[in-house]
Length: 272
Image (cartoon, rainbow, N blue to C red; front, side, top):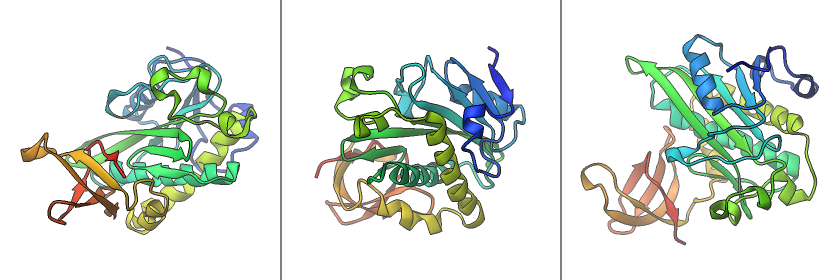
């Protein structure tokens, strides 16, 4: 697999990009299996923080828990960003939340509309999901060596492009505005917001960003259900979301006994 362009930014993205580091080195593929797979290989080889892998089309794009991420060629923003945050491997969740917040802020400014974060890795509006994030990390000795953050943003795709099972729950720039958008402009704005939030995350941790995330949290104060993991795996319980912990866990006050539990990998369903 060879990249169509590497090193200097593609001219269309270079016109808009105002970041200091993120996106200043780009690997561009007209088509690849997964930008995350390419970025993970590059990260293992020592590629510096801030490098991005961008594709016009992914043959096997994926989301959380092995779900497929479907996008027609040349329509949307499909990229993966290499980060090297300090800390232990558990920090990948908090990185995901910080970046989700940044994307929601960027899209709100671009589209002059309200966007929310759906814990842990989606950005949504009132008509559906517009962006997804997949963070994958590697480390040794309990320390994280790199985090690859895959970002898929629906820009110019529309209902006819989406599988039946997601069509009613998806949104894009095009479905929201009726217009086609410059993907380079969208990506540049998103990278600018991600750099600002990620830099603060590196300086101060996720704690100071938690309130910004909670202010946009789709599930905040809503009734949810989930299946327990661990010793009580499979037991379905209900509760109300109270916020997020400093490590990015979703905090839920259980209906049964008012105990507050922290969720990390559970699938959370809104029921009220």
